[in-house]
Image (cartoon, rainbow, N blue to C red):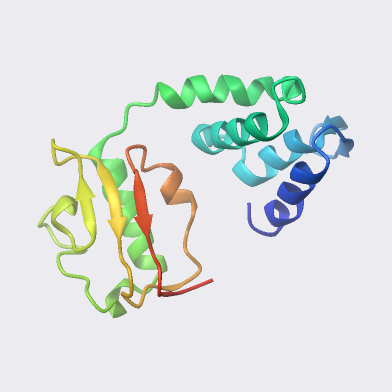
Length: 166
């Protein structure tokens, strides 16, 4: 999403029923549909579902009828079967893009110990899927990569307070 999302998401909140010309489709679309497409991309069902759910709660289902594709994405997102390889890959991206080598505590990270044993990471009872990432005051630095979060399907809590993120 980046800058485009920073522009379009507030417009969705301010003018949910407004239609604008959407260059990618060559037709007029509701602002929230454009925002969802630009913020989430074409293949991120979880993000689109979250966007649709937020917009529906904020503006009601009548305003969101045109976001039916996102509703379908919610169905698709709910049927995704997460796997530990995806969780591992997403944690590695977070580590690499936020200066993990320089974190105050990076015990276990990027080792064969198993991602559920890494500092600040908690997993489900089966020790497969990440449920929490708690890296408070840990010198996590840089632009936090949001895309990996959308692929951590079992993630319930994230704490990155008191770090150097932008």
